[in-house]
Image (cartoon, rainbow, N blue to C red; front, side, top):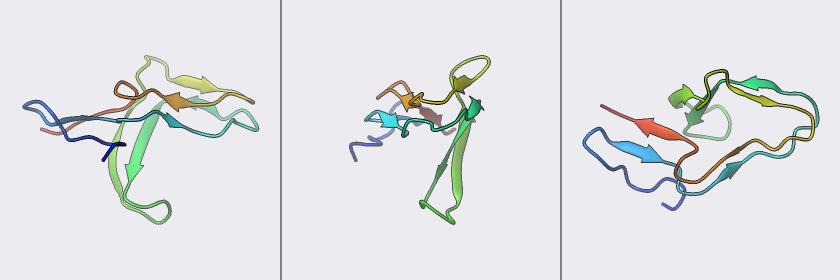
Length: 79
């Protein structure tokens, strides 16, 4: 479970255990404002969504590599 270690805390907070990096963009992708986690690579069910930790999102331009750092990049909380 290195990618998603056990949840911690009273509100079941879960963080990505390893960096999550996408391939370099081959065109401008626009501004990433949210993320989604699915249970399959295709035709999966959306399990979680959340905002990208920036007030205005993260612009991804041609040649950029979008990366979510380990332990701080994506945070999921369940009540």
